[in-house]
Length: 289
Image (cartoon, rainbow, N blue to C red; front, side, top):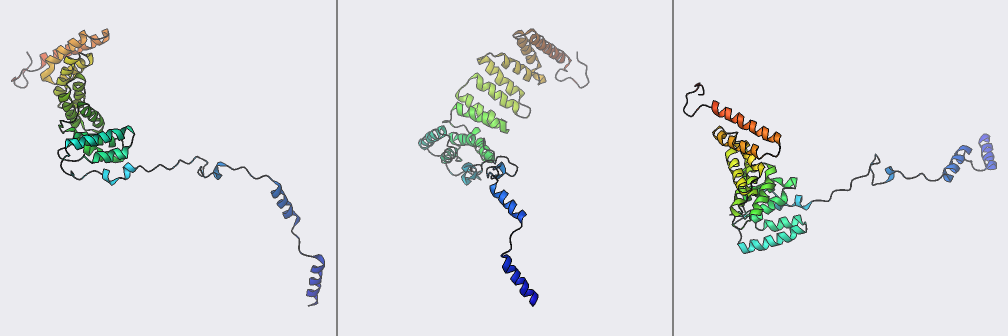
């Protein structure tokens, strides 16, 4: 009891306990030091590695619109021409302003009807084709438009549609679209492009493609048309004679001696193949005369 009393008297004489000198010194240094410079890690615009954060992508309303899902069927009869004319005019104005969503909504007013209105379905297909998540819908409209002979659709529209769908494997539809373009504007360029579409199809179209190039060459005698026709006909044994004649003509009009020699050699090769080819009706195994 006496020891406790002495301890209390001692504390009253000394006053309150004081902090250690080392802690006081550290506190004084911290208060007097300048604040550390902010780093990229402190900036909310950068991630934990100090790299700039990418701003969030704005939502694309074209991808969210349920109206642009692939249709399960048509929506009714085609609209009268006057109504379609007005809709297409609005679409043209909106397209100039790059208003994709509004343009699509406008075309949906006249698209996916029976019979197909190519000015609506075709333009809608081309509008949506660049958008990967709308590719299925775009191809749905494209297949309808490319095979429909619409008297109100222009040659230029069919040609644009054919070129737009070819990279997506719709070669047959693209060839048909060019056939409609040719029916409206018979020119060499369209025949040549239709030949290209036919060549893209899987085999069996060499002669039809060659015939298109022959028509193109008759309208516009480009050396490339003549050369490509010869190459196509050379793939079909029944057309080797004509291919040989064409290769000689190609060689005669070649731009360089090297090309001339190349195509003369090709003609000579075909001549040898023609001589060795059995004549029609010859029994198998009979040697060539």
